[in-house]
Length: 191
Image 1 (cartoon, rainbow, N blue to C red):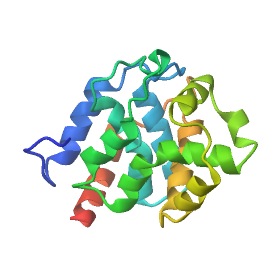
Image 2: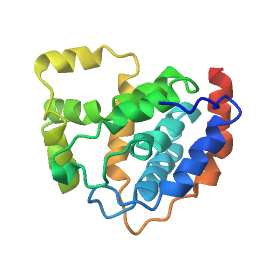
Image 3: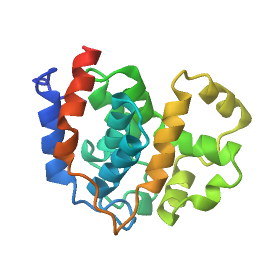
């Protein structure tokens, strides 16, 4: 749910403030913090030459972890926090559909890849496997067909792949401030 005073000029500073306050939180049993993970994903997107919108999506895909009241060990407690929907709801008034779709469906993309690519499951971390089970496991054939209908499916899947890769405890990605101008450009273009 968005804050009532948010608008095109205040959403990026608001996200930056949320990020600053929460970036050091544990990332669901991974060897990096949630902030390190999000920044590594954005850097992977940026290095690949992705559009500003897809870089923004890679950076913000887990913003929903900062917007809900579930404990950081929710998965260990058998709770699916639905962070993807929480994040999408925060962003959808200000960001273009491709960014919101990448946030909203990055969990479904994991389920999709598990169903369509036999080698993909072997690359998942222990924490991702635990959350996969809470999120419904690999998609059914019908779910795969429906997922394939999304016009943003290629970007959604790519953000998911960066999501899996952005977990290097020894890597120092650019700081959040590096992406402030990019995020504002994306918001301004979506207005």
